[in-house]
Image (tube, rainbow, N blue to C red; front, side, top):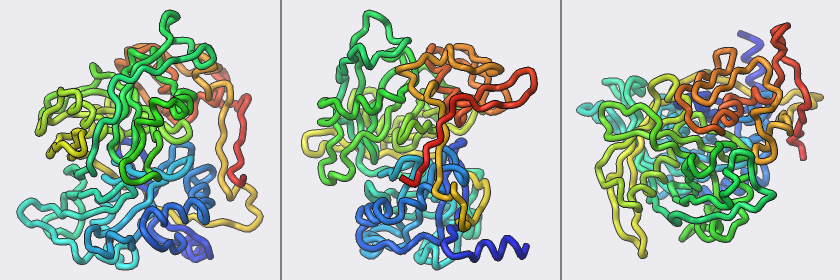
Length: 453
């Protein structure tokens, strides 16, 4: 189409391939991004300081949405030049830049095998497909280090095979704090926390990023909007998220709540569990969160309950609903390093294409910088009980959560507070009051956050 072709050639246009892994999006920017130089972490700094407007334009509305996730392909890094990696990547989300992302790595594995554009992936021709296993190995330089992928291919090795899972070997993962007691002062309490409980117990583990991992029974709810900022200021957490070599990786990325009794067990694994991951600016992962799967395996190994070679399945609410899409993982190597137990984890899952796009900026478009829309009454679960939020027409039940409109039907949720998390997880239906009589949707009490600032 002549119009599409002419728009795609406009100056400043960014070209993307969209994929998803168990429903969690990855918007892969493969062309149109400004040049970045130096080591990958320096490129990450440049992206944040000089080109963050592109992240906002591609992640936020009107081109994206609050749950969008991105990957910027970096053909040249210091480890690509040394031969340790084939290509690099920077990960983006609604708030900034990640150090590792498992679901995006799985999607990227397919994309990097399927592209034969030398400008996008100069070392593509150097990949060597294995005709016996019908797969190809490639090394991805993420901000946390080199991740080793195995991508299934068609018999001739020219394309990825979507019927089989992509797998990756993590960087070294380890638990940094076990059974840490975090006091909850009166001003930080939430309605579902039992009255007699003035603290929660959680663990901290590293899987390319630092995660606070807590059981649902500790919380009585799953809304962690304000809990993550509170934890980031606690000295116990600050001490637990110090990376041994790189200060730029030393921060709490996410809070993962876990229900060890929920989730179907695939035939080739010993057990299964379900997690709900809050990261960035109240973003909720639709996938089982691959880098946190790594962290959870390291944590289970540190507790003595996950030996090397034991396969385990990790679910999200989306994979539980559809009956597939869990990530399977096993520890393939463990060693004592510097007084702590470190592991390398193999994680596998499947990614799929959803579309392609060229995003441009038209002159006089006042929304071009990106924006978010939210309802402050439903944003802070620690301050507001969503049981009483304006959700007319949206049926919420503790054991069977149904969001009308066919978006999510979550079965078997046992913890009271998960009702609120699912409303947020489906992309902001909690921000809208559905007009049951007219069938329309009326915005009420919404706040627009302009990304130009």
